Image 1 (cartoon, one colour):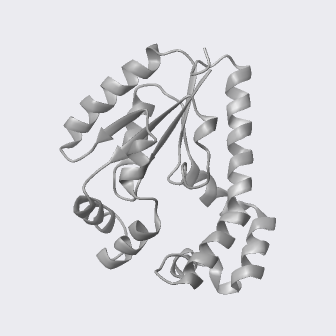
Image 2 (cartoon, rainbow, N blue to C red; image 1 turned 180 degrees about the vertical axis):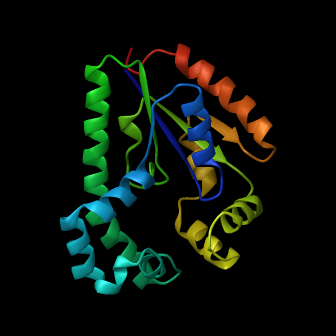
Length: 201
């Protein structure tokens, strides 16, 4: 079974790529969605977050304000949150992968913004990076959320530079055009990935 990683920066369109692949029939899991579900439903995780950041951190916007920003304190808080949530996300994904492997699925994809940052690249057969110009990232992310453009830029600043992500990719999708352009690019990459062997074959 091939395991495909999909990553990119905030506002590059990686979630849209994941949705296009789902429409194509792929099984695609989102690390962000898995993390949100765990933070909402896992009582032990909620308690650990409250103990680390205070009861107010049950509000996602309050927690975001603590972990996204330019200061060393923000960096420490973000690392602490990742230490709490990330192992549970990885455990959930491993269970999903093993389930599909047992069912004989030919392919599974995982969309993860932090794929390279947390050193997961060796776990994938192929990695797709979705990229876009920074100004376009900022406009997209601000328009679809409650974040200001400055808040989006703060998040971009703490992510791995896109150029570095591109260097680690097997495929790069440049998402700077229309949705139709993106669909065409995704279809080409998907077709190639469907025909490639597992990376260790």
